Length: 177
Image (cartoon, rainbow, N blue to C red; front, side, top):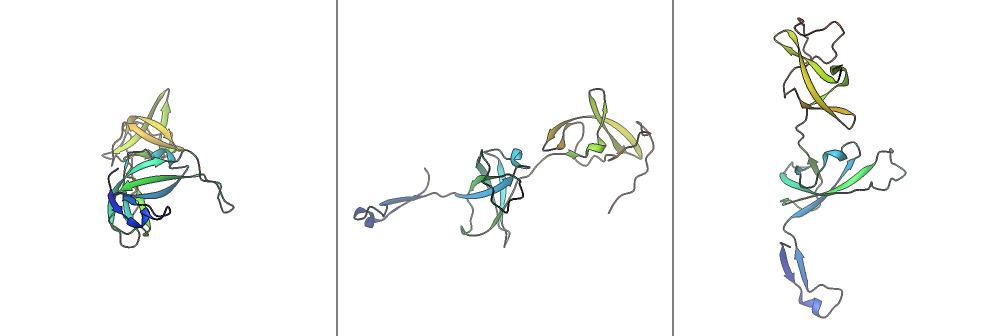
């Protein structure tokens, strides 16, 4: 174990005092995640940790994720919660509140945007004033459609295409601010 060893000679005379204490250089932070985001956490995954008050930041790694939910109390809203541990070299005192953030490189689609033709899925992208049909592959994760292929970040899709739309149809778009 990497760490700093401290010797306390009082431990030689007292069984309650340890003779040698090893303090790890890295710190651990315990986090809680609900059942809705549990599938996104994997041991070894890199996360960002920031203090709440002064927004100091450091990188950490998920060490472990609990296999069983925390026992519910009477204030529970019936959503299962799980503990996880993040390790890292956090340069702040142990008693500060922190926020753990996991960057997710996923594209999520609303159900209404995805159309089905046989076993193939597709969406309509908005390209140069026209609807362009694009075949996609998705995977269900937590009740959401996660794009596996066929779209990239910043592609503009038609969120709720009607039955009259086809590949090449001219489309007028109103941007929301």
